[in-house]
Structures are given as C-alpha cells and as structure tokens.
Length: 99
Image 1 (cartoon, rainbow, N blue to C red):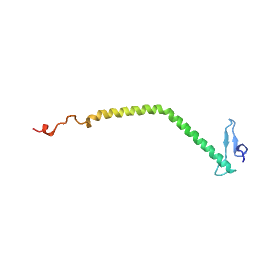
Image 2: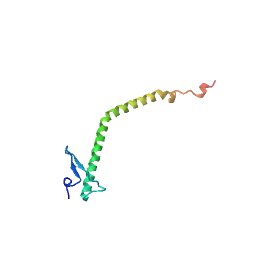
Image 3: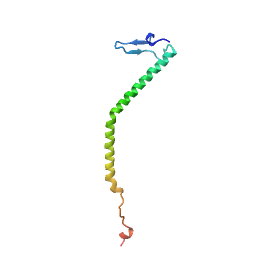
Image 4: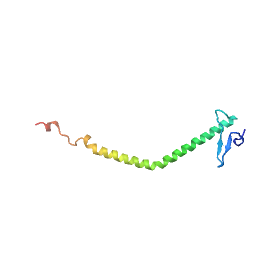
C-alpha cells in the first residue's frame, strides 16, 4: 500500500497543511486510497457537525429566554381573552329573564 506522502497527488504547503489533489472519480491509484479519502470526508463531516453543535449550545440560553418570553406573552393574551369564553358561575335561568 502506498502512503499518501509518497503519492504524486499529495502536497504540503508552507504552513504544514496537507493538500490532497486526488479525486476518487478520476485519479485514485489504489483501492486503499478510496478508503482513506472516505475517512477524510467523514472526519470533515464530523468536524462540521461539532461546529454546528457548538454554535447551537451558544444560542441555547438566548433561545430559552425567548421561549419563556413568548410563553409569558401567550399566557397574558389567554388571560385577557378568558372573559370572552368564561361562563358565569351562576347562569340565569330562562324563567328569571321572562316576566
């Protein structure tokens, strides 16, 4: 199995970052290269998911405050509209209304 550092499609820039010029649809040398490429993509996917989760965790306290505020506002609206749907405790009977 060929190592990536020995491959012609591998480069390393001045900062030490690895650059893979291989393309799994065009120029893979060995079947193991495809597995390595899949691992790199999976690692990239995991790192993006972790970054998304970190962003959501930062937003969680703000979301909690927002949900509490909206719930309080909705409860106030329900309380102010309760008189419209509330029935009297002692409803008048039809005989009390007629003479």
